[in-house]
Image 1 (cartoon, rainbow over the protein chains, first blue to last red):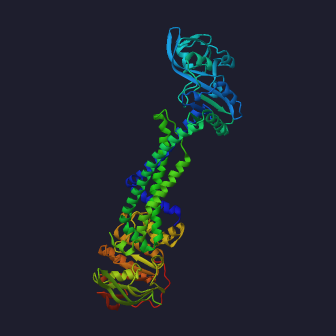
Image 2 (cartoon, rainbow over the protein chains, first blue to last red):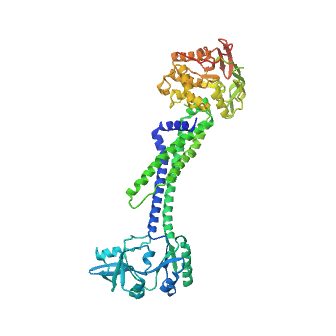
Image 3 (cartoon, each protein chain N blue to C red):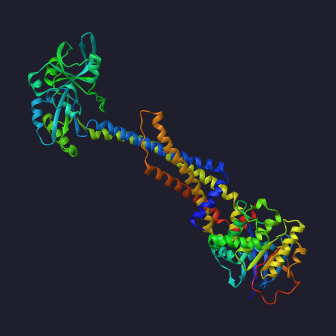
Length: 392
Length: 242
């Protein structure tokens, strides 16, 4: 009897009791469907995270200075000397003042004020909508100029062009020279749209912000961020005589950390789904045991007619794997359908269906049938024909 | 050469430490082409004897040669192969597989003999037709009468062209008329050259055989011949019963 005939025979047996078959399959169906759906959600989330970081550029390194002591101050001019090293493309140091009171005409609001240099826009992959950003001349002249983010511009000026208008920030008057394009919030939570940018020195002077707190670095080589990172680390450690005063993170690390968190959660869920597959396998084994004892007489007849142990073993093994394989197939279709439907119910999430995983889940379900069918099939094959014929 | 040669066959069953002899040393030769009825009351050991002859069970001691093949110390799978090739079983309860159609039931021994799908379907249909069952091949056993079911079972026994037909109370589940018909069919099969061993508790049924062996308490108590065995064994012919 060839494989196709064995399969056909098993199909007929399995179909002859549809309710029992479906109930037996249920564990496998749920297991396979949840593995596929969860993997799709997990991969969708990972892709989403990647997209968020893509906006920032993967060659961004962020240095945060932790301490307040005099020993841990960075000198702007010295920093800009280091920027000339080949590992670096651009340095954009920043100082922040959050909750600054901003007035224009009768409108009042609080925003984050960022003091920075002319490189900031490039390093953060932001763009101007109108006007210009900070220039080197602004830095030298300590100009009282400001660039507003798109949200700030909308709050204060509505649809009017803000360029040329004067705003009052904590009592100091600044002239707006530009407005940035809407960028959306990035992974680090800070938003260009919600900020007002001033020349670094002007901000230091007016708001008594002291030394540079953050240094955004664009590495020269996207594929060798590590070189840039170790150079800046060596410089800082040497300058502060300690490696405790600062923290350096690159976008890759941030992205990978978030991806890892999402992956480990997905993996945990998948292992729960795998347990369901396992339980499904036990269900199959249970039903196969019942089937074998129900069909003892059939086994006896087949053996008396000339079936060898192998024939009986294969017959029941194929039956068990047909049940689990069919369950796997239904689970596969159900899982794909669920993965497609998922974003419609959870608009913030995307899913990415992986056919590889589908195939593996299906093959695994067949394997579950074979493994859990082995014991009952072996039991059936060992029945002695006279004992099997004697039962009614 | 005889079809069946049993020499001092003993069978013991063990209940705890107690030893129960079921067959106490049976020696028996059955000629090719003969029709032997084995009779005995229940508990006489005739079913055990049938299991021995049918290679479903092995003797505790003694030897059994079937159609020239010595069967002692044979492994389970080898016995299965021998059953498949040399023995056609006819059971009291027909023992058809309920999920399969008549023709599929008849095909079963051919499946295990490794006959190709097309050839075995042709063979099975031919045997069914020769037993007057053409047109019933597609029916499930539950759709057939007892007599028809037993004919399908006989067709299944004949399908692999075995050396020996082994019938265990083949009329036991049938009414008198149908039983007589089945018995008539078996006599015709014997006329056509099939060696038959029929086991029954009913002396009247056994009386249809050429040779009647009575067994009681695990021993042969009488061995009578009603009609001589066919002098020369004819080549087995196809039987066609209208």
